[in-house]
Length: 495
Ligand code: ADP
Ligand code: ADP
Ligand code: MG
Image (tube, rainbow, N blue to C red; front, side, top):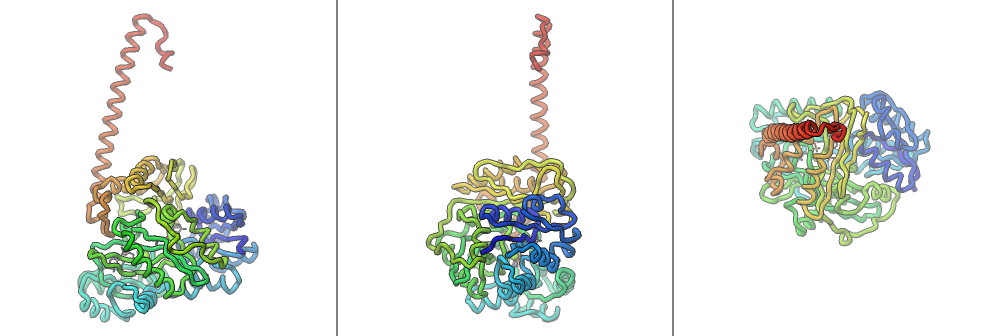
């Protein structure tokens, strides 16, 4: 049984894992870089160990160093969070070798999931539909060009080792394909030291719909419903919601069955996510498996009533799933906004630095997972995600309006945030009607609409301030006149 967990991560996800461990009476060990000396996860864990310099390669990606800490602190399990080492099968194998319980899938399964080509091949075998494309890796630009002409432009060049929206290039003709091939190759080499490329048909006006999958060590598998993550920038998610407006109960079951099959096909254990694209004609195509806890897992927790980290720990302990598919009910509607430290108007460039003051939203059915506190710093070394703001409601509309209230409540001093953009999106008719697609921002000209909204807001604010000033001056005038009449201390009364 797991008694002491090292969290090989930082930020909000490290705090998220520590909370569940606390609730379960499991001891926690944090690790931190030079940059994170004052971070909350360091203060909240039972023990904390410094592991190196700010650059991830020197700390959060340093497998040997993290293993040293686990062995010397008597840790029996590791939770990798997301990002960093979470999908690194070498690390999972290193843990297996050292009898540390890696809270996630086996190293072999992770290795298979981490290779988009191998994984697609396994899905084809299991009769899970995948996006049409090259039958295998393309060895050079010539071969890629031939395939692109066969399946027809536009196509995507994808590094099989890509992730987090990186290593993907849309090309619409032979010339772009040749340039794109070079870029994806060099990006992939600089990110992971190797490159392998597949060609995929680019599906237009698609929705990103993913399923939470869950499988124990005894072969029991379920899905924990879908999440729609179509609102993205640069192929990275910004806003997620569950249920998806285009998935009804029978579709949920139909795709859910595919998902269980997908988990079995790669012998997946623990929690993971099967990502699909839904074409405009309603067809679903598998794209990849994320072999870890997903950033957006809180919205699925909200509609399922489960604690996913607890579920992960139970599965890692070898316990059988405590439910069957038919026991699981989806309740209500949940939305997540990823509050990023970035400047929407500078092409989402990171915005970093000290945060002297923050206000974290609260209220019924509002959840905010964050590392922020007044006086903290947003570091340029790590991901721009500062907080995950989630709301729940018995109807979609209640969840949406609650989110707008929460977005209005939230305040992060010192850095630019994606909050204003989210208000524009959540107020738009297209969002309200669920007309979502992965090109939502461009399709509906959201950045220009944000500019308009900000202008309007400024005007309204100055009008309101002017109105308040006039009322005040009338009030003062009347007080002054009264005081002239009976010359008592009107000023004192005002105080
Ligand atoms: P999803 O989990 O929905 O696929 P992402 O792909 O955006 O969403 O999440 C994984 C990405 O998160 C990684 O590729 C990395 O850029 C980023 N990331 C890694 N570590 C952290 C961290 N500790 N906190 C926030 N973001 C991180
Ligand atoms: P990553 O590993 O970076 O998450 P994915 O393969 O999951 O890469 O794709 C990320 C995003 O890129 C998707 O959510 C979608 O917006 C877009 N995308 C990926 N494949 C396709 C495709 N074949 N056609 C259209 N869009 C795609
Ligand atoms: Mg993905």
